[in-house]
Image 1 (tube, rainbow, N blue to C red):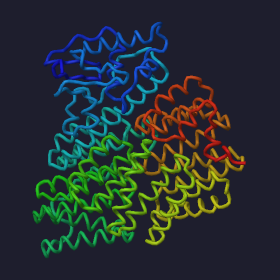
Image 2: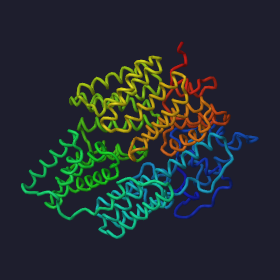
Image 3: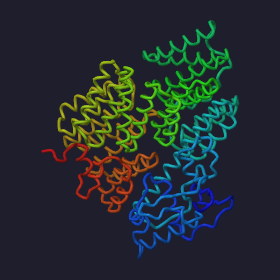
Image 4: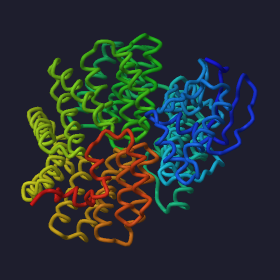
Length: 620
């Protein structure tokens, strides 16, 4: 291959370095736009697609593309660096690096060193292109900005786990500077000061953070902020007599108490096990205790994901020392789950990939990994890949007779089938998930398949049956204190109001569902987007004066997280509001979304989204 290794910097003002020398910039800004699209596109674009994106108004669109491709090859150092066929792809020399690739797929150690981390994609580059490219660029800028923050958070947590509090303070400070109103960033910075043993700095930052949120947002931050300032005692708070067996028993009893529903008592046992194993210098036991504590904080407590992630990173650090691959696999998987909840999917794929490598042939661990992977893939609209992951998870869980681990992917598979409007398949999957959950008396999860089943019945016009299911799902969600399950059900109440023709009441219910999502910091971000999408559908149909703002909120949330399917729906809402350019943006963003039903909605004769949600299309 002709050419020398290159380093392309697309974060911040774009820059090309070849053989250690900064190369002259191209003559046209669209060359940078072309490079960014080729580097970030999930599928190889064709020449006609690139023409539609970047040169729709050129006198000679094909000639404009040829000239820009020629300039790009010159910039990259040779004629073979960009393919010349109908499908256009980059073919960079071995050893070449593009910063966005490192950010997307590299380790946090590599990504935090990127000079453009935290800067905007193609900063200062504005091109006159199609509405579709404008929407794509805006979405990628939001997504990479969020990914940069996720990398800083992961790096700070990793530094804290390894005892490098100074590095953790540096990275957390950059997080706060990047997004000053992100409460999680403030929590992490305060925790970093506390981890360094600097009580004065932790208390000062706590006071400054509280003042900022009061002044800028008019709200009181959550309790996690103050809890982060607490410097852990040097000694265990519980006796460690009995040595290693007693510590292992403390871990087992803590996990059992958590599973029984006595969360605070169980978590305290696990904290004592962590402190006791540290004092006894039982690193192997500490790794197990940190995993149990982190998992309990992530799954069983509310608003504790940040603290749970810190414990999981400490588990990984301890497991790496002792060679406990199975524990490290579980910790990486749990961290991947946290990233899926946050909507930081690219970081999730990296963590889950590492988990799978460490899991070896452990069927149960692999089942859990595939289930979380499938959920994340479904969130971004990669439904065909998600379906494969779910079926693998179900088979693996069944092979070791772990019913709960079978019920979870079975139910989320039903969600994927519902999004694809495959109602018969969705009903069968969700009924199976509900039955498995009931058999296991898994009350804490049962509301999930039940609420989704109710939505299937709404689309089939069985309003009475749906109403009863939503009421039961809401009661279950309220009893276990899971705001995600509550939000699904309250969203369902809105659909029922809309099906009965009361759009005002539907909007009120959807707004309440959004408020429910916001009650806790660590709810599943996709659920918030799902609720907001339904609210937009109702508001657009009602011509509500706030409809436009809600649609903008949906586009921003989904673009920042990379939820491509729901991003498309945001532009379809804009179409229904009368924006004629929105349909082109929807088509561009739909590339790579594995949902034939979405193509039907994009069709010029496709239904309004509210009619689709209510199943009124094709139903007498």
